[in-house]
Amino acid sequence: MNYLQKSAEYIKKMRAKATEVDITLNDVDCKATVGSTLFKSSGNFAGGIYERSVDFLIAVDALDAMPTTDDVITWNDKNFAIVSYNGEPPVRYSDPLETTYRIHCKEVGGE
Image 1 (tube, rainbow, N blue to C red):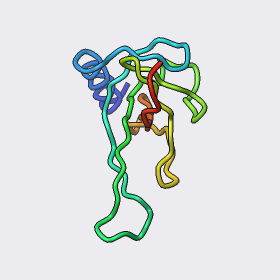
Image 2 (cartoon, helix red, strand yellow; image 1 turned 135 degrees about the horizontal axis):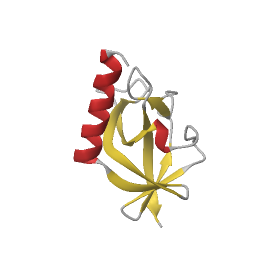
Image 3 (cartoon, rainbow, N blue to C red; image 1 turned 45 degrees about the vertical axis):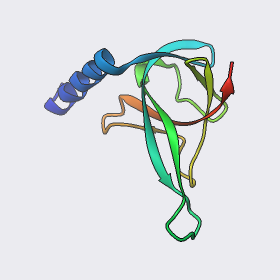
């Protein structure tokens, strides 16, 4: 394991310890860090229009496959659809070693 891999593993462990919450991805219980991303609309509007996604960072090794837009995340009794903003991928790796998914979501209601 090289220095970059060791550092990425350390950051993953510290993030898990300090910020992870319980979520459900479809019917699978797992842990995630909740964040957000601000996207600028692709429209040509004065001043611009922005949308904020709710992001869930989940360790790749916690899931069997990369999530898709057909999946639903439940957190705090609220459902979140996995969405794409401005043609960007709805799920991407959050780090260069591809150990964490960043999943962009939009709240769609309660359970």
